[in-house]
Image (cartoon, rainbow, N blue to C red; front, side, top):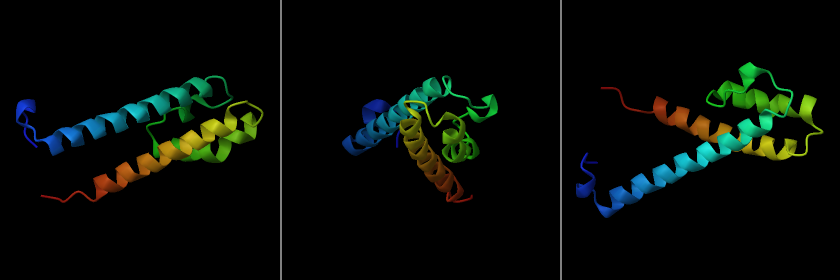
Length: 99
């Protein structure tokens, strides 16, 4: 891919657009989860959604103290999606060729 936006092919522009859209959707999901987690009984150290270990911890433990919250099941489902995406990102990083 070139650095000059004017020289991008249609396929390259489409790839950039799709990546930006994917990133935007991920940020939206994270913002929703953070907002709901503020209403719940969750340790501050577990609210960092950039760590796969925290996402997995939240999947396992969130409903224990917060099962009565009206959005508890919804937020756990969203966390599952975030964890899956984070896991894929990590796998892609480990598959990069070394030079």
